[in-house]
Image 1 (cartoon, one colour):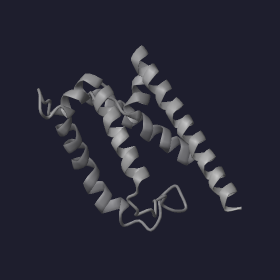
Image 2 (cartoon, one colour; image 1 turned 180 degrees about the vertical axis):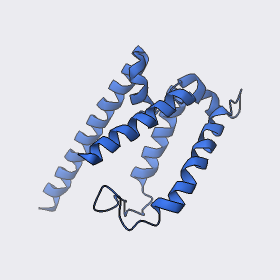
Image 3 (cartoon, one colour; image 1 turned 45 degrees about the vertical axis):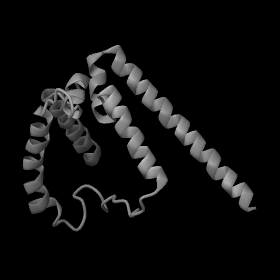
Image 4 (cartoon, helix red, strand yellow; image 1 turned 90 degrees about the vertical axis):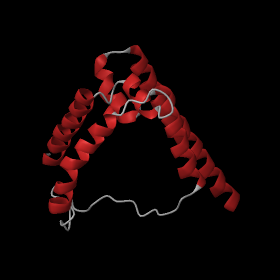
Length: 148
């Protein structure tokens, strides 16, 4: 229960920070990503400020811990492969972020604004996740059948 409460508080603080900093404003994000046009560097200062707060805490407190405070183990990926799926997904994510000016984390936070475009984005994101999940399951099932 404590893990869930701490997660809720951390998520709330993260979302609040994104809202205050302007990271949920698609125009601001597109301005930051537009390095060849009218570039808005303000989000670089937001990221720099976040790193200045995070880095000392991480290196002094978190990195030295043998296990998380509220869990049995750290949940770290052991995948070190750069494959087509990872590169393609990253490229697709970046293209979508550049076009829409919003990515999944800020989109969830921005749902509270009630803006229809944000709701459409989140709905499209969930539909895309569902479609990829279905296609991945079908591909895995086909691979199992073809091995038999």
